[in-house]
Image (cartoon, rainbow, N blue to C red; front, side, top):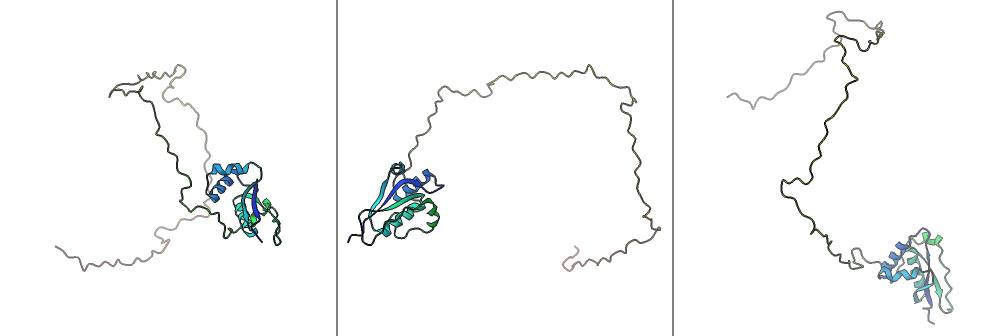
Length: 209
């Protein structure tokens, strides 16, 4: 009995929170094709991604695509005695896809693999035929004269020498309580000096000329 009776289909449904552009890019990496070739798969119409698979392989594809952000279905193409149709994986089941599918033929490109040849960008063409440089020392723009500062002093006058312009503000004498303080008698040692050890200097290698 032929067991390759299953297919993996996709109708454009994405995992909750998935970005459509990112999912398309994941598809392109999985199948190693240009992203323009996977864009029609997201039209909302059912698309068969892979068929002629046994049930176990079809489910591996389903889990791998779920990790890529797409909700796919495993569909039985013809009745099989030992096969049961696999229900569609809901977006809520995305968290369950924690391990990569073993034995899956679709692979991710190795780091550094060039998936698309870079497009050559032509050099920028800037028209400069109408431009010219001034001669050394030539003044390109005449400087604008700066008008002399004019300050109106008509309303101001100088006071006579010794005139008090602002009466001084009285300042109260500070009140400092010194009743708890006393002065020591002249010659009293307030703190015993700490002994200082004599410096130990090695002069054995020094000689006088």
